[in-house]
Amino acid sequence: MWLHALRVVRLRQAAARATRPWRRRRFPAGPRGAFRPLAENEALWRSPAFAPSGSSPDAASRLAAFERHYGNDVLEAARSGGDAARLAAAWTAEHPPRSGDAWHPYPSSTRAAHWIAAATLDPSLAPAVAEGVRRALARVDANVEDDVLGNHVIRNAVALVLGGVAFDDGPLRRRGEALLTRELPEQVLPDGGHYERSPAYHRLVLRDLLTVRPYVDVEDAVARMLGFAAASSRPDGAPWLFNDGGLDVAPALELDAPRDGVRVFPETGYVFVRRGGRALAFDSGPVSPPFLPAHAHADGLSFQLWLNGEPVIVDPGMPTYEAGEERDFFRSTQAHSTVAVGGSQFEPWSAFRAGPLPRVELIDAREESVSGRVVTSHGEHRRTIRLEEDAVVVEDLRDAVLVVGVLEDVGAQVLVVVRQRLADYRINVTLAEASAVSGPDHAETGPDVVGANGARHTAPPGGPRLPSAATTGVSASDGSERGISAHSGMRRPRSIRAPC
Image (cartoon, rainbow, N blue to C red; front, side, top):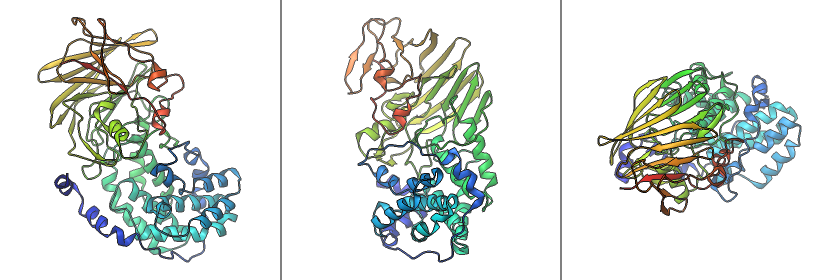
């Protein structure tokens, strides 16, 4: 484990991790200039992009501990005419500068930006928040998260730019600008996707950049990210849920409508197809940078499918960021609509780390079909998805053995037909409607079904019946796969396995 980590870690990450204990003991005073509202962003901060997310993580989780210090309540009070000054004063009295989640650099960055936004919307709030913002900005300046990188450093940089402008502090502003200049060429890929490859987190990073657009030249990055954000939208406007992140993570941004046809994002590794009432998303590229697998899932060649504006096959999302069996499962191949050959595509080592990552590549993409391959230590798997006039055909190939799954319209149901067997082959699906599954038409018994508790049951001839939406926790009618991705509980996706 440590040898692999040493191979992939960035020198900047290693240095920041080594100095982190010393830096986290520092609580500088911060900028001394007078606060000025950032009127250029008033419309953005009043827009749905900054509306409450509806996130409700487990109260005992680290995520919930972080969110309590984001300053969301103060910003929302300023947006709605509530008593933001009382909320800010109460937080300040309860949380003097000291080590802990309240003054971690990520919550400090978020709180500084939100309180600046609140004092812009309600200038009378400035005396109540100014000193807290100054201290938060100084804390971030001394503790930029180079030990993490990714979207955390973007959030740090944005807070420093906004704070530098609000307090007329040139060094602080230049520090944030320098971080963006360093990070954006790498983090925003040539095709416009964010390099952590989560469409939900992509929108968070994009929103951050929109807030500094009046003060820093980020136009090229913003334009490319807007293009990816639009193309990676499901028919309901939410992002396709690949990797970490859920519908409660992604802010509501004004985006162009996705156009029909096929859109290929080769660097980010996604293909999006819209054709004849069908919307298909296909994961066909790297799962993450090797030095930053924090939000990576082992979901190479997985797909999501909507028909006529309704979800059919969805991603189960991520219900927890807490280390343990549940998070490990939802990061695994077995939790996604792809093939597990000999095990998961990579091994999670902790909540935000992973073993060697698979090689995932796009082979071909056109309106009528997409194909790709994934190579792991267990072998190679190739997949082709064909959009036929009356069916979606999924062909999986390993060791010259072909398995074909056909999804056909059958009234209000979706029929999945597995036509051939493949040893050590597992199809993982999370269905968004009540669905039926038919086993191999030449088999005396159908494939095994692995339930939420890991028990395996052999289905009778004719194949097993998958659970309905009520059992899987996913509903097509009300979009309640949000219940999965919004950090609430769900039962595990079912796996259909052809016996060896």
